[in-house]
Amino acid sequence: MIAVLGLVIGVVVGLVLEPTVPAALQPYLPIAVVAALDALFGGLRAMLDGIFNDRVFVVSFLSNVVIAALIVFVGDQLGVGSQLSTAVVVVLGIRIFSNAAAIRRHLFKA
Amino acid sequence: MISRHGPAATVRPVDASMGLLNEIVRRPVEPEYAEAAARAARDGGPEPTERRGGTVVATLAVTVLLGLGLSAAAVTLRTPDQSVLDGRRLLEEEVTSRSARANELEEQIADLNAEIAALQQTALAQDGSNILDVLTRYQAAAGGTVVTGPGLLVVLHDAPEAQEDPDGADHDSFVQDLDLQILTNGLWSAGAEAVAINGHRLTASSAIRSAGQAILVDLEPMIGPYRVEAIGSPADLQTGLATSAAGRHLALLRDTYGIVTEAAVRDDLLLAAATGTVLRHAAPDWSGNHDIVMPSTTPSPSAPAAFRLDPNGERSAL
Image (tube, rainbow over all chains, first blue to last red; front, side, top):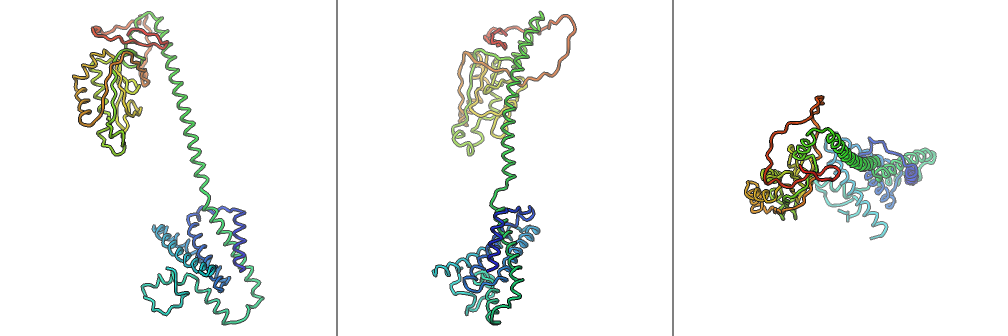
């Protein structure tokens, strides 16, 4: 719960301050946002399942973002950047959909 | 793809090749959540409070930073790149202002040319020699003065299928530079004194070329229909055109490619002066006599009543 609180505070501060992202990181922003979304949905589902854990949430969030950005970066260096980012987005998208379906089942019992 | 069997535990043997898909679809939640929950249940009881304080601060700090990064990324991705928009607007403004300036300068050039012609008139008329006559005759032949008189108007239209579907029509159904070249050469040989295409006066050094689908006359692009005006004896021009190779070429265009040609006699054609004449060589003449010996020219009996318009708008014979 502390983790979620901290996340919300961070988002609000970010919207208020509007910091500029350094130009070197800008190509990896989309994939980082999708990876963060995946970790968020996983945490939400875990919360509804009753097995939420702060440490696991933070570690999963961080590792998702870093690994996704790293994969895209390595792909760019090798020349398969767009294909690798497509693969990452496909996998994350499937996971997001599965988590969202489970959350939906929890919320609406449907 | 949505798991209908609940969380990871399934009694069916999982095919080895399906490992990846199963991993993705059936275990989207980090298994660490379940493991941590199982460990907490095993260990029993709440966690020791003295360790909780430090963990709370660390968790809070890390998640605040993560939230900050997330919203920064989202905000950056949403706004279009301001520098690109600014650059484009700057270019648009510059294009419009430069075009306006170019038009201004062109008008200035036209005014200065008229002024020079008027000054030339008055200076040479006072000289008393035949320079002015020679100059006006040469200028009329070279296309440097406005000329008016009777003549022939020939209009060339692209073929109807080219007009309806410019992109898909055959290249041959458009009027091409070769057609205009043959037509103007035919008009010159039939006795035209001045020829203009779409208002652009042709000189002895005019070029008619194609660039893609546009025809360039002296670097000025033109599109159809092409109005070719020729000042001369209308009867001579008509018969000359009809019997020459140019006339046969126009008939070929009409029969084979559907390019329509209309020819009409006009009594009062007005052709503008050529704007592309360039002064290439000038030398002062300090001798007292400025008379120029003209090569003998016999006026042709069917000389048309072509006049020269001077800058004041008065007609004078060539």
